Length: 198
Image 1 (cartoon, one colour):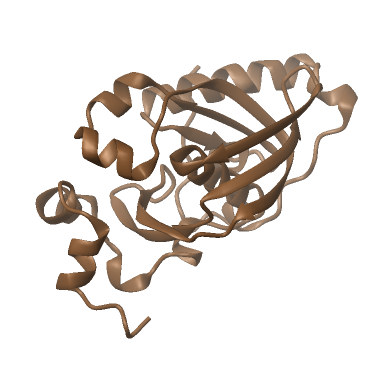
Image 2: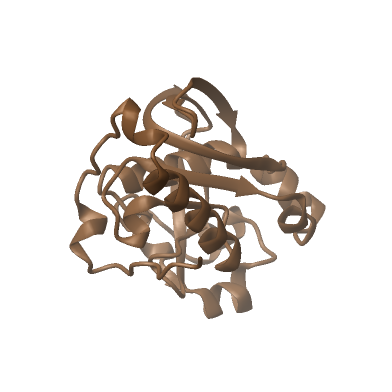
C-alpha cells in the first residue's frame, strides 16, 4: 500500500526516531510497514525512505538504487557520483561511522522537501552497523552515491534533513535545477555562484 510522505514542517521529521526491540522486528506490523515503505519509495520514485517520512518515528529505512535510475544519467555524471546499482534492503537501528570524510559535494533532494534541491557535502566512505528485516546484524561499507543515500536516510532517523547540511547558496527549485544545472558539474555551479559567503 502506498503511504503519504510527510513534508517538511511536520514535527516527526525533527525528532530522533526510536530504536526497535529485537522482538518487534519480526512482528506483522513491521513486516507490513517495510512492504508499504518499499512500495511508497518505488512509486515516489526515490532511492531511500525512512520511517519518519511516513509519520512513523522508528529507526527503519529502506534503500534501493536500481540500474534503471542510473541508466538515465549521462555516464560521466554516474561515474562522478560513484553511482552503482544497490539492491533493495532494510536498515534498522543503524550506527554510522565515517571512514573517509571527503567531503564530496553534489545536488541532493528529498521526498519530504518536494520540489527542491541543494548541494550537500557528504562523507565519501562510511560504515553502517545495523540490523536487517530478520533482526540479523549487518555491516555495510559504502562509497560514492550509496554512502550518500545511507547518510541521508540515517539523518532522517536522527531528526536531520538535508537542508540542515546544505550549502545554502545552492538551494533551488527542482525546476531551476533541471533548467540550469542538471547537465553541469558542481564545479560549474560554483563558478557561476561563488560560495565564499557560506
